[in-house]
Image (cartoon, rainbow over all chains, first blue to last red; front, top):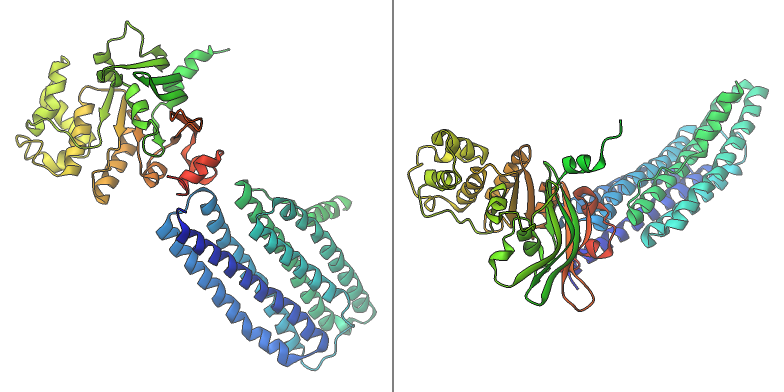
Length: 231
Length: 266
């Protein structure tokens, strides 16, 4: 077959994207688990391992550059390689959220959690589940799945709002809890953003398969628009 | 307020190929081509070897009929008028629609005469020195040859010879310039010079280029026609997709175009 070497190299890049994705999945689940257990050593490890994620991203980026320069990809190949560039950047940023959560656990020191973590791990599990399926859809160029996943972001948003309201009740009852509430709110916000970025990956998958640049409507926008109207 | 549509069309397209088939004897080399050539744009014709790209290009200035036994069906409208109308003089067509070939083919005359000769035969009565300079300038060759105009056109480099051939085509003030693989015999630098030149020339002329080099089509053209042999065993070439070049190289509609531009067919 013509271009066998090139196709092998493309396959290699796709595999690398999956490896990066699973590094990010592990990091985000690990960061929440460590917070839940107040395991500072585990968080320090995750904080350090973010460097590995960054390095992996730059390695893939470099491979992509070389492929673009040497193989002059066109049409579907071009869309795939250009989109990989975008996807690895999303994944790297998603890894930063895990690092951020690890950092919060480290900075909390001896302070106990304001409340047991219930919804926060749910957000992490849901986000990682969405990412995992988004990456599978990316590999299979499965447009239908890529279109269906962003809708699930509503669940993560709902959990975030729940966490927010719950933390506010603590703050209202006792303003001295502000700092500890803020830490957890920060964690939840990171997880909310994590899930948002899954949508961007799904948009790229649709672009690779169809060539159409579509922006999948975020329900966040709708939420804020409604808030605005209430005023 | 309604403008008659034909006039608008005429303004937009210099050439319009309508259901054109080209035969060498009984053999149908090109089948049912319909493509427009946009004014002041560069249109590339791409496709695998033997699919009829050059045959189609040569129909645009009636060069095919120099080969005994060729015939056509359909029409090619040039400024709205059928090129193959019996009343049309093919020699006049070739003045208005010039051609540059794969291998540079300057006349075995001086650089100056290469340009002046055609213009003189065509009845040019103006200042010949000015015309020669103007054509050489437009072909981005003047600075390189202005001191050696009396030297043979064959004494300069291949890239310069090709630009001389372009200058020669310009001397009779054509509207369209056809280029058949104009850079395939040139090195990469000379190739890029030709491509840059095409971008300058399209301000005043319309260009149609046949090229095997897909990167060249992608870099240099505005519209692309993708040709391929029909699958019905007749082995006749036809245009399977015509679109803006950006679209052809990022998101073609036809699977065969996709396979060709990504290098999986050829």
